[in-house]
Length: 130
Image 1: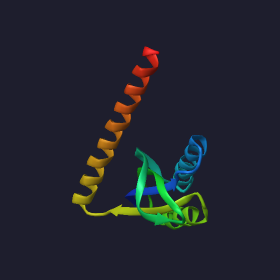
Image 2: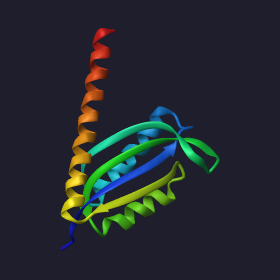
Image 3: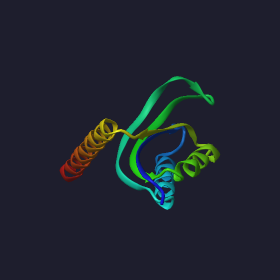
């Protein structure tokens, strides 16, 4: 039986894409995680930021973080999916193994959920005012 571990993945999507195309890329990554046996705990939409250095002629990128649990074997397939996607300029996986790392993962995941809920509430309030 595969061992389930806690992971965090951060990826950068080309900022030159339209908002719909960026959301499509994010949904594709989420679907790949779930298709490979993962469970998404939370996400952190960091938005467009300036890159520290130019990557593939890109000076800005759309940052997105996903906290999830998954079997260890699924990470190779997820990496392969990132590598073949030309719209993702960089990605990283961070595995949390020790109890301390898992507790930090849990805290970061909860913070991301709170930020997401706060952003949703603000957007809803703005829409109601209009």
